[in-house]
Image (cartoon, one colour):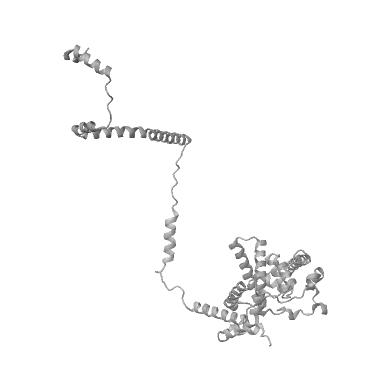
Length: 186
Length: 193
């Protein structure tokens, strides 16, 4: 099926009569991508479900003000990333949890999750990613799983390409070291 | 269960290594051969028909948002200029700072007050210790008052009926009594020395 262009979505959204149609097109095009992005960050399906709904409500409310100087998908990605990071920060504050404990909480959630299809290597990889700080994890996920370019990640996170490269390379080294550690098994 | 799609944005950069393009974005693979060797798989899953339900949930929430935007969420009204006056009234009530009275103006007064306090406390303790004795004397007075109120005949009757045994008069005592009664007149006995 041919994917509708962002420009077409925006044009239809600007017209009151075709606004609903435009938003349905936008949901069809982006809801799954955004869901998987959020899910990889918050791990739990129910949390991801709530967050994705909030993200698209925000998109609906602000799409009229969206300017075409950035790409639509990077804009939606930015909203989703911010919502997810805010959620994780609130979770830390609410439970008064230090970073490493939140990481182990998410790790437990991953192990207990009934919606995980990976093998032992994939589980170890996810556990390795969960040892990264939230923002580094965000960058790692977008580069490794979504295969976004540094320029696109830079547009989403508002971080310079140079800083992103450095952050991603640090993350890669940490994950590699974790994967090579034979003492950690699942 | 539905499995996540493989690399959502991969269409632009697929077969990058083979084509030798965009090396800058792929140079991490040399640093992390183990990670690079792991296939990027969709490991998370969602309940069946989840994305259909997700669309419906989002659309329902947006319908609520639309409704909210058309309905005035504040049906109550206030008189014109109410909030300007309210602000003024609140400021008027909160502006005048409470006058702070210094309790201890000098150290002399401070120590004198402390001494008074110790004195008062000492007196309190002293009278408190005196209290049981006072209570005792009060009890005695009460007993005397009670005896005074009782009829004399009742007391005599009580004493006569009393089981308290009077000690028997010894023979020496009775001899001595007889001797006194026989040898001294009543006048002599009653006169003072």
